[in-house]
Image (cartoon, rainbow, N blue to C red; front, side):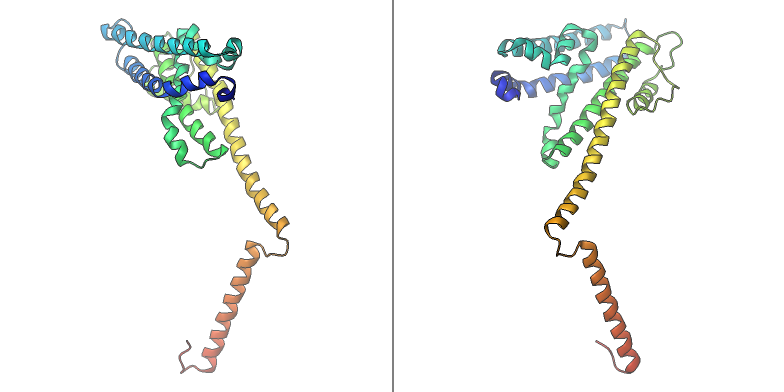
Length: 256
């Protein structure tokens, strides 16, 4: 729809998808190193933070450029709520990493070119990215909090798995306000992922049943695959019975 409604925005996005994906990968790598290897107050922490703010400025420039190119400004803003959040609230800037889905565009071509294939590739990449970044974010804000139950990246990863799958054991949970914001987003994402997977599986079953019913309706006189298989088994059994009978009648003669 954006290709038709906003051709200039679509053209800009085609030109900038790869560069912004590289910037997003750099951001993810720097953010991971910052959280896993350093703590606030270290000189290296501030140096890496400069890189993170620089990538954030790049994303702001991209959003402003697309907004200027858009013919319907308010409609564009309404269609890109995550981008607005990223620009206005640095705390939520990791959501912009969803643009890394373009990294697996080559994978989408390998998969079946249908709706289910695109959903599978999108779910795989977006779930992995959201889970990894959420684990980093909750670990960063929780590890030094009083009475925190998430004090290592392994515990943060376990918490993400139990939360995003809506299992929720309750053995690990955020105690800070920032951590609970991350948890709220992860919970909503988990509901969406479970619902999408369930819908995809149900669609696949309906397609299989519908295709078989349609084939039987269009060709009522043709035997089904099961009937053909049973007929072949009966013919094979009859041939074996015949060979056994010939062998019993002529035990000294080899039966071809």
